[in-house]
Image (cartoon, rainbow, N blue to C red; front, side):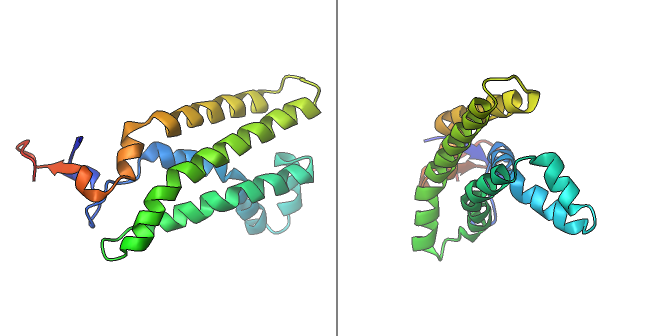
Length: 164
């Protein structure tokens, strides 16, 4: 059992979602961000899509892989003590779906590299490096595991250091 300071909890008593998980989710849903930017700039939308995703099929693959992440970003706000069934389901599924999505993105990035016959490109290299780091984070983070454990396992501590 780990103790966390009071400011690490939300108003319902759940441990707040770590910022690194949010950054991971934003990276996994980057195609949705490009879609929103392209839609917001009506005249230059096709140019933005062509610049970010020269091969249109890659854009669609990443959009499809971003759907579970966007749903999880929305669902994590439904954690509430009165919604016990939904909260338990969110806690059980979030880490596993995130890990599966990271693995799928890694395999897609490797596929992109293989399509280019192993030619080095900075974006592919940085993307693979970030995705591998994200995979390690999702697998090994104690804070992330604690965030999606039952509420009574993570006791808050008061500013004096006493357990509540």
